[in-house]
Amino acid sequence: MENRHEPFDQMTFHTTPNYLTLLRVLFVPAVIASLYQGTPLWDFIGAVFFGLAGITDYFDGYLARKHGIETVYGKLLDPLADKFLVICSFIMLQYLGRMSPIVVMLLVCRELTITGLRALASAEGVIVAASQGGKWKTATQMSAIPCLMLDHALGFPFLAVGTWLTYLSLGLSLWSAKDYIVEFFRGLKRATELRKQKRLESRAAKLRKKEAKRSRNPS
Image: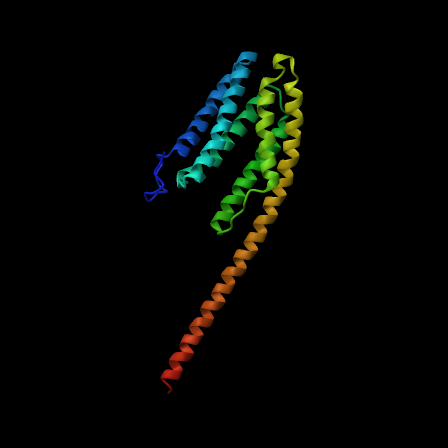
């Protein structure tokens, strides 16, 4: 494991969490290829691949925080890997007729909206933290997807459970999107007011400096 006592370069790629994130990206084509076979056995294999990818999602963040080895690459790749995995799985499940195309479109549009919102927030110096609703949305999606993949394996109605969880995740997705949007505009307002205050303080400091200079050098 990486040595925490040495200065850490956030621009390095060679860390265990980054390798786990890259592994999650590599699981995406494995999941797609498995589901594309269209057989119960390969559906099961696809669900296993998805589950393993979900495990890497937990451990890469845990290890990065625990050992203080968060990198620029990890901050970029981690959310992208999650979206690649979830969105590609949704599309394949819709292709197999296990998800409504309307639900898939709504979920994908929500993800694109929040991604764009966070990018804009970052450019404006605003931090939009993950909401509790967003965390529950992720949990329900990560549970729904393998259930939809398993379909009716082992005689259990995984498809019905997965469908119910999918609609629950859709409701949570739309609700948490509202939270993100409200938090973004609140943060943007605070950042704008802070910049305005700094400009006023800078102008006041310049005026005080001019006044002090005049008092030292009266005409």
